[in-house]
Image (tube, rainbow, N blue to C red):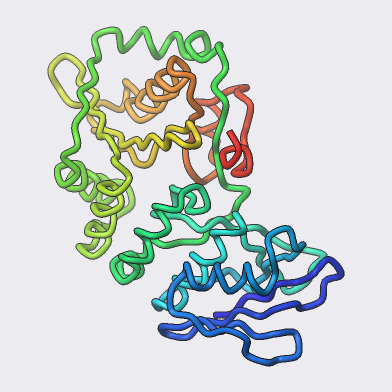
Length: 294
């Protein structure tokens, strides 16, 4: 895996290449100038070779899929300085990607998340949960005051619905595996569940159970990132037998209203889908840069 750092004229200033366990930084002349084995060392080397403020564009020829420890070091080290990585074989057409935990939490937001991800890289790589995701797929908003009005009919159906919060991630993930098996025809492999369990634990996520007339009709997992004042709605499951109550939509509306009441931003993580537009309505959309500088 390698990434080119291009200057303002589109010329290669540095090349950053990863093997199984190390990252090598090469000058424009093709001379190795640094070889490191952790993301902090990589960030420090790049800061010395190209001080912050130097206009550089990190570009990969294709979307990077990390499979080795060295790949994780490369991507985590870059995300400490650049919130996105460009995928392009041609500067005239390119896509930006954010490095995420579990297709959900953008690692550029939090140095502690990045440190944790590097320490647990083998677990995350094995479970497929250290992932570059298209930046355009981020769904985050500044909640507006019309949320309750927009969803008044749905909210009326749930006047008897109660919400219970806990942090029993193992219990939630058992439901998540059953849900994905029902909806997508595949249970969650053990190595993926192990990675998700670790991510939920390190992020301090909260499980919300939605109880209607004594029955749990749906569950969601949310993570509050205090520095960016953002509630991330990571995962949700619901009982097919209660589909008429739209429990999946209701869980998101509940969390959106909760974020609005607390003066927080709200994110449905990554993936642009019509149901998310239905939930969020006209709320102002935010980019990752907006979350980085609240």
